[in-house]
Length: 285
Image 1 (tube, rainbow, N blue to C red):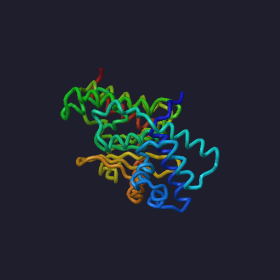
Image 2: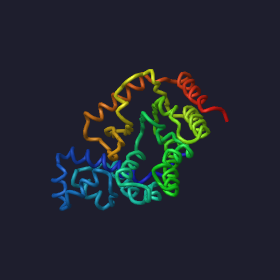
Image 3: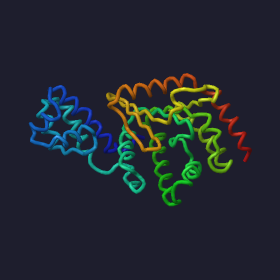
Image 4: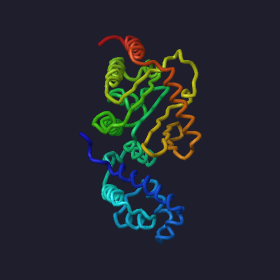
């Protein structure tokens, strides 16, 4: 059954509709702010979906933009009421940084998720013991436990429920064969990947070594897709994390990259055969 709507989804609805209404009214963000005697930053934050919005402020915006359709007004007022409150990830604030917190808001609102990682199993697909082994060299055990709990909560939201997004994963053969933890950890992880392949709304492929060089070898990335809005690109690298939406050329290159590696990656039985081959290298339980 559908989950209660997260405040981040309501803020996204307001972000999209209010930006479109402002543009239809022929106003810049600065002009709208000056007309309402608000700060420019307030309009920017509303249209970025990073803050909640009171019904009173919403009505002022709608009046300024000339929005009078009763059904639309009612829907946006409901979204404004639902834009307040804590998001599901608030309880993990002790292990979240600002950029990843913002990303989770986007992820919770996405209708599709496409991801590729050239080195390890993507976090979306990691078992708890694999994640713990992967993080062990970098953090104290208490922090690792919290990060793994956050990762598991993300997976539950992505894979469960009638309102989960369409999920597309390309797992590199390097991730299947790179030993993280004990052999039993890897066997469990590889079986989990096969189990995920059976889930609804999931497409999971394996990119073999034989595919050779390709644009995706430059690093991991996630593409989030939204109804009525541009895709968002999320990249993580040694210097940090970055969410990109306004650089349309760069986002398009990664969209093309994912389409390319999807075309050459193994599907169905061929993908399962390669996963099983990798599992045999880690012995039997």
